[in-house]
Length: 135
Image (tube, one colour):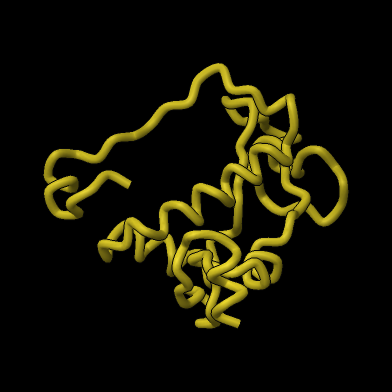
């Protein structure tokens, strides 16, 4: 198995952050498929929709002041733990897998997901000193 992993690229194998199996990714493809399956989401607030309606009832009754929200995953196991580890436990190596999931979600929305403006929200100086990096 290790030979196959090493042949897959130059990245050394590591344990999957979720299942602890060995892979070349921080979260293995099986765990991504299991815990981050594509979901139908409201185009405005990104809440999960049970049907193919474009918006949820709340956004239909009172449209939010923005055009679209894209969400890669729901804030639940295992993603809640990984996000907290990235932000508060000095684990910047998790940024790649989370950014990859967000990239996949934006790409899945398609061409109508072009943003007029994307605003980063920087950390305060105090929080940056506490964390040691800006996630």
